[in-house]
Image 1 (spheres, protein in one colour):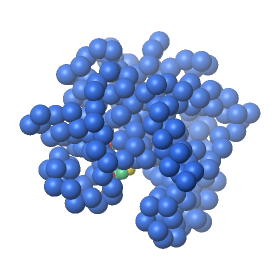
Image 2 (spheres, rainbow, N blue to C red):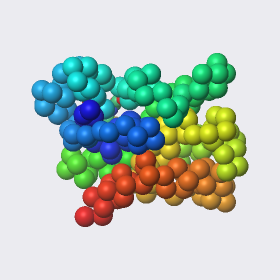
Image 3 (cartoon, rainbow, N blue to C red):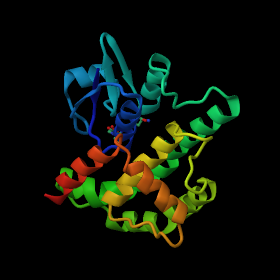
Length: 212
Ligand SMILES: N[C@@H](CCC(=O)N[C@@H](CS)C(=O)NCC(=O)O)C(=O)O
């Protein structure tokens, strides 16, 4: 099974981590933003990553891919059957993909992607404003909903945890230090999630690349 994308994308990293948690064998084929690779374009009609090729089957969008895997590889379950729990998991996946990535992306794109990958200046004022004004309410919210030492939904790991943990990696790449005194639960959650085998090697590779 081939996943097209770069794990610097929080959506791609989320999919890779879900595959890791489920023990799904994945070949990650690196493609960049706007990549013309025909196989990637066939799997992703609008050129967005990640995209999947599984035999003859093609699918784009991290959430669509995760739901496909959940149906195809039900164990371990990352999307609960219980209606209320499932609704909450979908909420956190959406929260992460829209609000959290939208905010973290302003810092990550302008401080990292633009200068490092696109060889042009980023809008640092926009990044600083996002860190100052947009990020605190999102972290305040997470601090309220993450149970101490626990998971976002129910008693075990779900897609909610993976989806929220992924853009927190991009914040770190963008030089954001989450204050452990103000956000003890978010800090502990991020440390626990990013130490998991489904995240740790990816993060180490990304940090190694950025340190070059
Ligand atoms: N909702 C999509 C979002 C995918 C997405 O926007 N990926 C970005 C990278 S972080 C991308 O491919 N951007 C390239 C573009 O918009 O052309 C998902 O969950 O996969």
